[in-house]
Image 1 (spheres, rainbow, N blue to C red):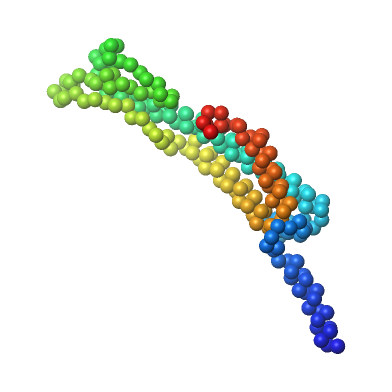
Image 2 (tube, helix red, strand yellow; image 1 turned 90 degrees about the horizontal axis):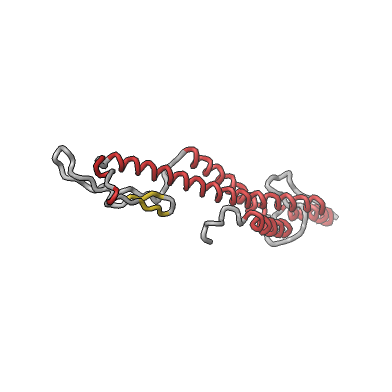
Length: 204
């Protein structure tokens, strides 16, 4: 009799512990925690609401990616313009006035929005002190300089996007098939809406 009582008491505890464990395969069962222990959709309506929230989160992630693309292009162009103007002013200060007025040896080339000065323009005559003249070449940067107004917001946008991506990853790690389908669907819709933004001149 004691044995039967013991068996009857262990069955509910084992089933409850089984329900609290994560199911390591795709399933549609409710009760999986989403991000927090208290967020456990336990009904079909609550699960549908969680899936809708994940879709919105996916749209937000794709919007962040498009926003980063737009701002990165603007920031890079501005940085290169500032660098080109600075290099041009530095080079012009190192050229004697007589060489500046020689229009037959002056020409400017615009390549990718960066002003490059030809060697003919940057060859000054001998300096008055007697030292030999030297050729001054325009420095072309491949990496824009660090600008606080550009790079700090760039880091904030990237951190926000990474945060959303890891939240979506945690939702997928629950093996809830409804979450997985919602995330794939949300990312697809988000890419359809925002994917073309900022990629017109990207070349891919």
